[in-house]
Length: 362
Image (cartoon, rainbow, N blue to C red; front, side, top):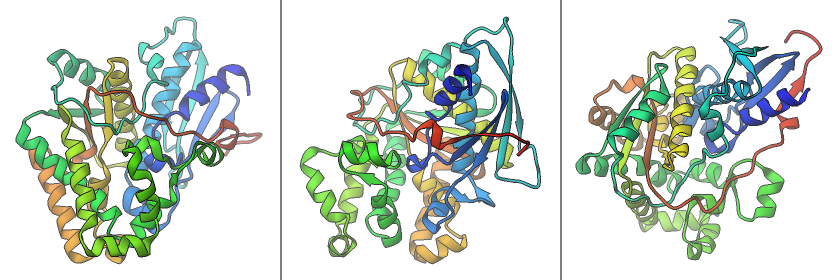
């Protein structure tokens, strides 16, 4: 692999992914990059992202990775041609990207923001975005996904409550609890070793809560806490944090086909990078939406009670109503605003573990 391809793929793997699971596999064949889905298919992963037959968030993730390739390639003088789902018989074969050297290609200004883009879970200031900021973010997202912003206090209060349902279920549904805590690393040494999941300081929890969270990672203790309503108190605190933002935003997809969602993911990444270049902080809040979308699947029925599923679906309808969109079009919910920089960043797997050099067609 030459230096240009190594650099471009190094930028690609900086894309966001649910629970930092980094589900991509890049197969390199000359100057053609083949992107494959290696998402896990366990029940809780299926609740958050869908199965390989019924996926949502993973497709957004792959779109973000593709966009990083396209942006980074311009800085090395390559134009990119993206072919989505090249083989209908292989749904995990997400895309092929052909890179062609072209002296007329100019670096895309957004490429400079790939390394700046990160999730910030701190409290934000409540100052709404300016009209200029909204315009720049919308233009950056482009036509692959539509962006809607909300800043009315009543709507922000309700959206924060809807988003915090995800946090409540993390601390009250055993399978979800066990899954999420299995993704947390508590020390930098552990994070450097694992390079997946959440490094605890990135969750922006106050230092005095670290010991308590480690105790609550044990389900028998959390079950006792849930019996006295501790899960609701945790969700209430997160609801307050979510409300500390000037705006909530939603990116909608143009359709529900897999290619539509991958294209929408490219818009999400462009918007997020533009936010970073403008000094804005952003936090995805898709948990409740994804839970709701998969509530009536076999995984949802097995893991959630009828009351929990009903509440999720009501929240999904409420989110769609407040943004004035169809529930089926919703792809990426987030809060955005001004905040101190995040307290830490989570590590990534090395490129060598995510890329394979091919000697023949996949």
